[in-house]
Length: 273
Image (cartoon, rainbow, N blue to C red; front, side):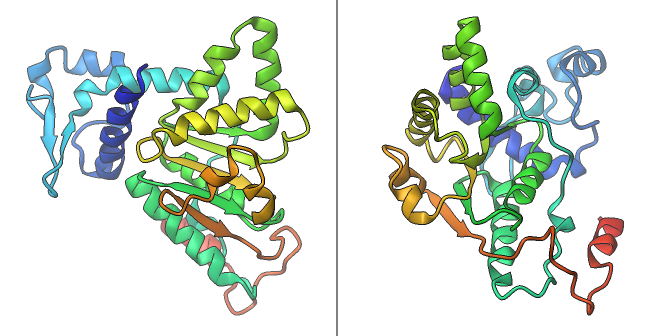
């Protein structure tokens, strides 16, 4: 699919994600389900055949009735390439743990919520293992189904070599490069192989050419100086005009005790979600 169509799709689908609780239709549904309920364009309960919807801010979006085929294409791509992960939520992050750098975690969660609502930027989450980077990324991926492609560096590397054997490398790289929203977990873990590194570079260069229209989230253990030193990629990932760089130098949640003054806080938030 041409990149310009992806851009339209991202913006329109983000609108529907933000407003799904207000719709009088099942959300989401497959193309076949939609066509069964609304066989004619004028049957659309949202736009009555106008194919466009004007939001409160005056922006005109494609109606969902035109987005079903696009959505199916994204689901097909995700089924081929996405790394497996369990549904995860920002509300499950315990912000009340006694970390000296707790404010960093709070900021990252706030930025992630804005990203989910707007899909209008890049995010780089940097820090040591166990600080919550992948949790935040998976929470974003959970929230923006079906337009987010979540892939770990390890799975990306494996897919590269599989696609070389199958003569499908170009198709794989194109799918990742043009994913409506790319969530790349653990950048740097694949940086031992020059060929794989070149494919990672090509993905980010392609996305950077349309940076404001192809939102991207990256997690990495690399230090800022190491990111800066990545050939042809580092400067893009630290571009303040496009990227929100968020260090997470918090303790490892796997070994940290909970703050006794807020027992069960995460469970309470889950119950009230």
